[in-house]
Picture 1 (cartoon, rainbow, N blue to C red):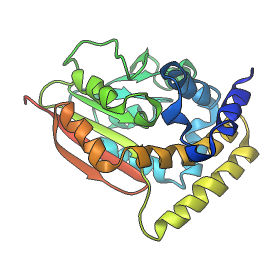
Picture 2: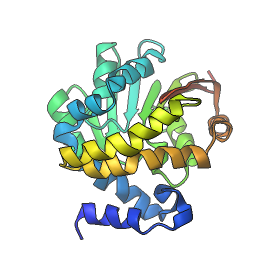
Picture 3: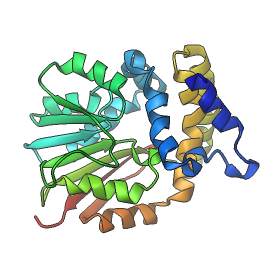
Length: 253
């Protein structure tokens, strides 16, 4: 079965009370396969289409994420994709290693960096890396795609040296009147844009809004803060909005 047909069947076959909560109810193995399949065809167009569909917010979010790190040191960039966060880290003078589940996205990153950035094809849920081997860590849009977000955050924290910072960027759901506009955009504009763009973007447009909403319904902010504390991260700061940046320092520094 083609990749798009598999995803469409998952979406179409959910129970009426699932409220588009497909990710939260997939078996663990299917959870790992889903982001790999979803992002596989996007590499060649990801940078420009992502910036356009985010209405220019993606570049701002990346710069803000990197600004949360103390200057200097070796950073592990998890879910590096085509290397957009890694490129910003390099511009700010960091040594960078990138890690991603998608070999197709990493191929684009390799063309961007050559040998300047070591790239690792692996899952954030089981990093093939020694404990306390990086000064800091950045991670974007990962926790919605894993079976146990708390355990994954602890695994990310494991490879950061004591005193180092973990900086995470995730989509948020705005409050108040802005939520109506957000809902209109992610449930109407994005699916339509995805159908026009094709090349894998239709699946993203159909999936993204429900994935974000379901994640926040199942894991409100207080629960997420508990993950950070359980992972040994303290001084947690959260900046809200449609792009939510969270940072915490590894205990022991």
